[in-house]
Length: 401
Image 1 (cartoon, rainbow, N blue to C red):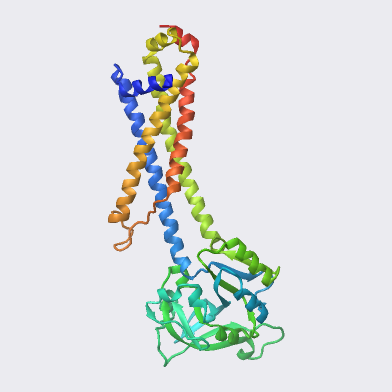
Image 2: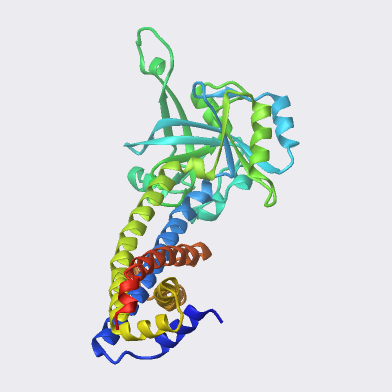
């Protein structure tokens, strides 16, 4: 057996004759346990918040979305549409028209975005699963589905065929305006459903058929603003992106879900990094106790070290004893902390101990990478702390009994 490791095991199993050192050792271990458990719980909490936030946007977010980099719209030819259908890995795609509009109903006005979609949209997204009132629009009909917030602002319900909602956009062009008809395009639609995703989206989109959006914006038959794609589960995203880009040309940018939610990802990642750094600082402070514990142990076992040196142990071997002692203390404390952290997170998942609202538990998620992050952070800091403490041993120290 490795000589320094054998001695370390004896030191860890035996108590010091000095009660103060035993007390300091316990405090150091408790600090490591609490620090690692806290870091794991916080990382699991942020992982849960991330999943919770993106869960709602993913309902209407496609796997891929193609948008023009020049202007607002582009033309999709019949041949390009056929080529897109033949791309391996594409399950379905939907042609989209988006534009800012003013919605008017029963004397109430509200700014929103019209999103004209074709009949494939419900295959590309899970929009029909979040319509608690009414239903989805029929293709090629003057119908709409609005968000819960828009419905509240306009006081519009579902399937009220006696009243229609007016969607208005400014007409493009130049010259003097002499009447409202010259300045504004309008279409009337009947609202047939109310969707509920989250507050931001509920206040943003009014879904209509593609034909209604074309009529409102005076678009040509093949003119659209974007295309949204649903991919096979086993499809290679990068390969499919490249194939879509080659079909649509260099002026079209293809984005995945991460790029579509770039602002949300940046915000979540920044917050996650900030909290990680704060709790890493807590771990660093806790590991200062390891340095103190090892130095106290060195002084306490000064006579024993002299004996080991006289028996042939080198200064390097004696340093390794205390280096290994610090590493093992960190490892044991980290494992115990992870077990405690895992238990608490699992209890939250199973029994919903902490609630944000009466019906919504605080979201947490168990991810293997968080185990790795905590253990790797702890061991790197533990090795550094142990090395600093062990470096205090020199020839003069072990020679003096």
